[in-house]
Length: 106
Image 1 (cartoon, helix red, strand yellow):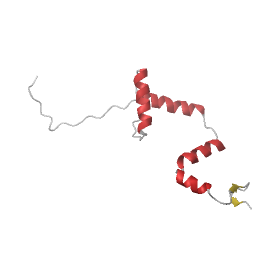
Image 2: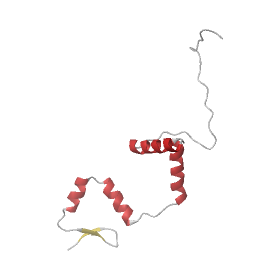
Image 3: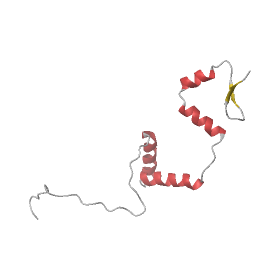
Image 4: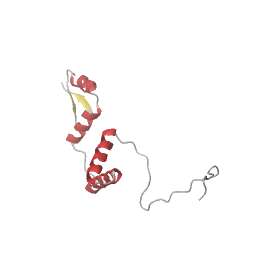
């Protein structure tokens, strides 16, 4: 074995891809990632495997229709509290008609 090797002209070899898997870059919220890492450590498995299993479980449930309750929850989560307060302070409430247009009640 040599005492020193020259890697100045070396090239990195191609990685062998796993069958049935694709490498992607995804941004997750820190708290979500931390939760998966903590659970994975407790169970002695990889956090990426746990994320994959969670995604598979959601896909296995099938597509569920969006209910009014779900829609209201999502709107509350996404709309800042200041806008909700301003929208709630209208003098005349608005309602959704059967023609799906906003009409002021009289």
